Image 1 (cartoon, rainbow, N blue to C red):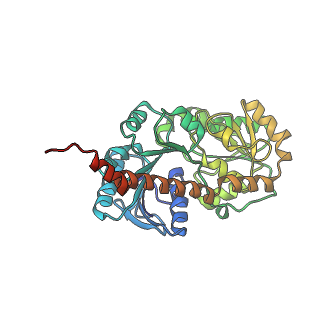
Image 2: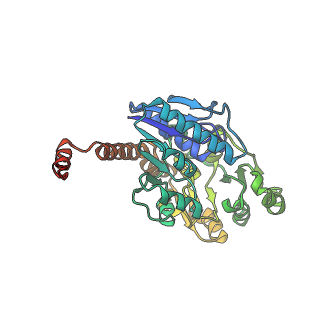
Image 3: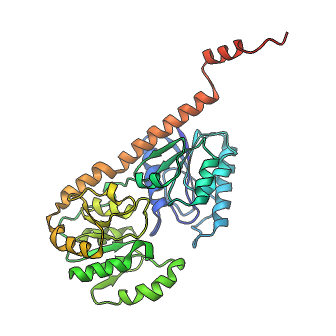
Length: 361
């Protein structure tokens, strides 16, 4: 297949630091190339890929500006139409749908956001596209759509070497935003009597939360904040941790950091929200809890019983790139086949249609 994958204009593929969508698209596009597909990736010019790269912006446009995204999407769809050599388009933004509707091509749309009324209305207006949720939880919250699948994210296990001898700390990795619960993670570590190492940046929208609530907690003696981490530093943080804390306060659509930790052999302790219940295998790759007190208790009573090698093995079985790309490859083939059959009905069907036409004589 000749596949066009449209990333964002905000962060390179793969991301140098923050960027879950771009990390997912890196692993997807690389594996599709491995399998012999012709992939054109629309991303930023500083992206590193074995796919054919097309770009409007030479570097990521950060912070996020909606006009940058619209301009990037317009460029990508215009180029796809000009090329006239693409079989199928993979989109990753609801803002792409009005542009994609101008193409005479099938499209698969992966949803990366929680439900909003505006996005749901947009999906309803374009029912011919095939939509993909990244978790069953995300799909359950979304409106019903005629073509709607669930495909979990996957990562390359080789990019996450395991460690079976953790140090004496727990980890938090993610945006320092209220919905991610970094303040909860700090309180949990304090309750459990263990140090916590944290990696993540403060985005401008979360400045007030950081200033008023989080900054005093980051100064506590049991807390070490290393700032935003690149891949090497992120893996090192996860390898050394007794557990990754995931005390989310929202319906997280997926949470790539959970499977990043599991692939390192590090169990995850998460609040029972969003995708966590379907990603964590209790007692194997982590534990689900409902309160900070319960999370602290699990650190001291249950985490020591985790077999970190078994944790990694289960993560590879469920969340490797190969598993994810198997599902996307089959979906792309099915969508393309259905599109071609709809556009070019079999000869017998065309004959029957011609026979049934009324005579004009």
